[in-house]
Image (cartoon, rainbow, N blue to C red; front, side, top):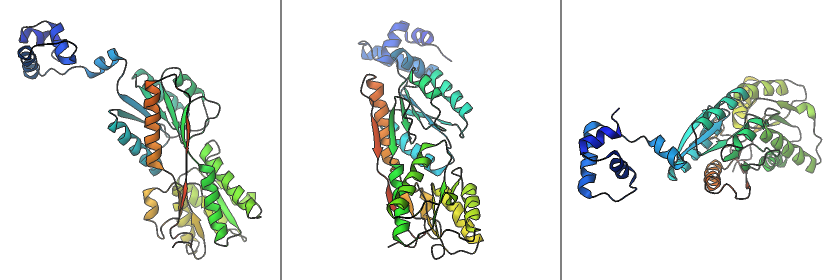
Length: 332
């Protein structure tokens, strides 16, 4: 790699003058600027952007830590975050933890060593130790995970309200035996969605049958397995609320395999409103999360924190909404 000294020699100026041309830190005549840039082009010299950024105390790079980049919901949120960051002049480094807390710790350490300006963080669970360490080093915004024990900026969706809306819709359609396929117990959105499910049943004076609440892992196979279990019972539910769309798609397969028509024999509601939800047969009724708004809010909140470390903590709760399609029988 050519050096700044070699550029200076070829342009017949000092290395300091080359530096001033590159960084625009002092007046340099147009003739000298032309000679320096011609020498840079001829030698193939490119300024070290990382070194320049570190000298200025910023890299214009953000870290994005996701628990499962293959999950369409996180992929769509990640795309929104990258787009919003790009508009503000930031690049994004994506780290996929695959739900592994050890990988999460490793990636947070890597991002710290890369000296990113800040991190948008979706935790693998409710563990907060790694996050507390990171907060001592750089600004952080948490997305889609409520960590009440940590003082950190957060952008969240109203998962509790979403679970309520999904269940209330099924109740309004006349269902009285409604099953629920929850997500992992250590992930707060799942617990909040189940709380909303319980509240809707309670409000409708329907009993909460704990045997109808089974736990999945947010992947299609777990939704399929839980649905096979529930649908094999003599008193099988007539409707199922799956706490994400991928598990709901697994439920659709289980319904087909057990000879049930959707929605005539089994109503299904998911959660997230991923793009695939519009391509199932029938299209999936679901709870829409404001993915674009979440991404934009997270980036803005992080950039605001980068610019002012002393600003008050902010917790933004975005609304969820019922998206009615064909899988519940109540579509318009």
